[in-house]
Length: 259
Image (tube, rainbow, N blue to C red; front, side, top):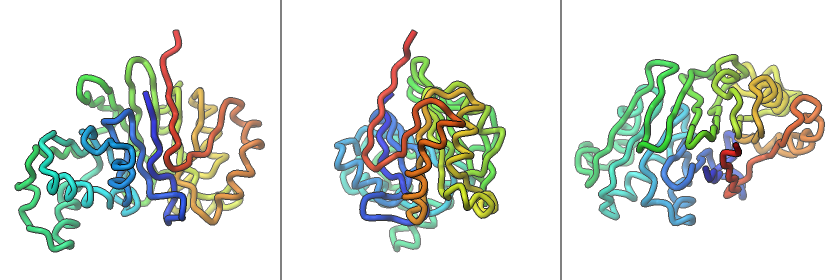
């Protein structure tokens, strides 16, 4: 799998970090923050995306959907698109389009089939394009939120979305090749992090260790804590003694199955 981080900031933008979005190969998006359309354009990947998995419906994770759909309408896209995530996805997207003064029936006028799949049960496995198997689990955030585990050809990538530390995530990430975990706050802010349904780097390292992951990637880092989080990497290796990276916009990781 080829993993491209389109946006890696937590909460607010910076000059170099956009809102959360991760591109798997060239077809699957994990979250779709504002700015995702432009990032996809830079990578010449706009036409190939056919599935979007939303972790939750906070603005920084899904507001890019409306600009993406508008772009697809304008270019007369014909490839079908599926949007997966917590309820109420369809109503939320329709409301955003309405607030932008677009035609209220715009979702019916798209030149391609748009399908919404709302997650209501945990531990189901979704088959996507006969290529990916997607498992998901409910997280502990301030709104309904899901983490995703993507499998392709025996390679596993787990993405936390937004959550405080939770056993569900450890189980979902079990023996993942790459565990992408939010680290919104620094470790000295753990109390407020957990209060608002977020993790710190130590939380991520402990879950990666307990899940037996091969690699940990920290993302969704709030700009005020970015420097502190960067400085904490070496100390995290006392907890998780494998590779630890901090995601940056347009960073690319590739992983293959090694028998």
